[in-house]
Amino acid sequence: MASKTIQLNLVNGLHARPVSDIISFLEGRAGNFTINYDGNSGNCKSALSLLFLGIGPSAEVEIVVESDNAQADLEDFVAFLLALKE
Image (cartoon, rainbow, N blue to C red; front, side):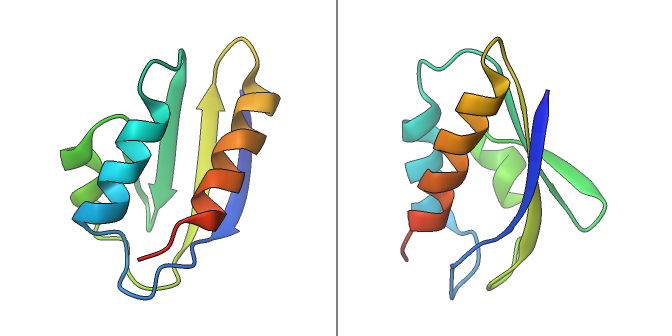
């Protein structure tokens, strides 16, 4: 398991478009990818789970990855999340 806290660069928060991008990015990847926000956790492979977190603009979140290559997978996923645009 590996984790990292980051600040998302999403002016409008985590809404349908970036959630769709996250789902596409993680498609076919093994392991569990989770976002922790405001005391709640969301499965990054589930659109509803992510949307129900209600992640607002420029939110600070914790990313947790459980996989065989957790640190490498975390680094790839964090880089992707930080590059997300509206």
